Image 1 (cartoon, rainbow, N blue to C red):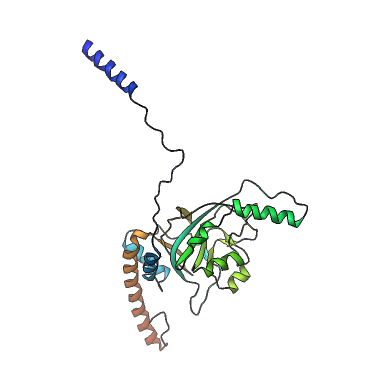
Image 2 (image 1 turned 135 degrees about the vertical axis):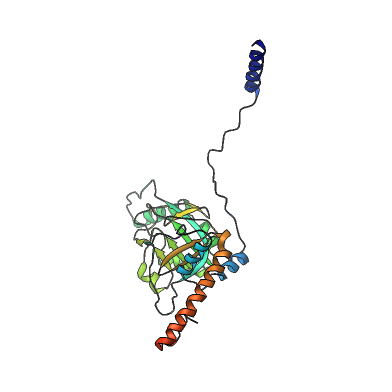
Amino acid sequence: MRLFALLLTTAVLAAAQRPAAAPPPFSKQYYEVKQYTQEQNEAVVKLFKEMRVTDVVDGLDVVGLQDMTIMDPAIRPLWTDAEKFTHRIYGVAVTLRLMPPRERAPNFATHDEFARWESRWYGSRNPNDFVHWLRPDTILVMDASETRDVGFCGSNNALGWYTRGMRGIITDGGCRDTDEVILQRIPVYLRGITRGIDPGRVYTESYNQPVNVGGVMVMPGDIIVADNDGVVVVPRDKAEAVAAAARKIQEGDKVGRRKLYEKLGRPPDFTVK
């Protein structure tokens, strides 16, 4: 008994002398993001060109991701092209997270005063560093679900992003200036129409970090396919397998529908060739 007490005392003293474990960091990002080269992005996007959302969804079933990466059907295309399907988009996700603000615009005596305040807001609350990554075969995917009536994308900035090679925009928020955006033929998939400008209504929180859009986790570098059936996300590490399965499914569908076209005496269109 005396020996046990001695051993216990020794253990307690030893534990007391050990340095305390370092506390975890105050803030931590658990999901590691990966950067890909432009060549890698273009190569993987090419695997999905001309596919339908439904083909990709079927391909996701094959790899065991049934219904896990299909966005809320309330996220719809702003416009559709029934002849050439130019509203369809394929690309690599560049993610952006927007947050509700903690300050509003004060009252201003003149428009010039407002313009100076607005300029400072854009510089400090809505920096546009993310624009650097809007390259050919990318799609801007915005987590903006709680930002209310603010149009982070509009006729001017969306057109500027589009000139950089970006293929389109996915947002669970909204878009403004939609008459012009439709006329400019910029593919936008959104939850609804919005009207306000950013200052006093939204903060930019981060870019190229994991986001939740339409109930789906989107990592930068994931593959996005969108058409009139909605938006689907393909995790990057599953992209090649999903594309192979989806392509086989799509080709089988084309063969079957082409035979039905022939039976009906209907000339083949680009969807069955």
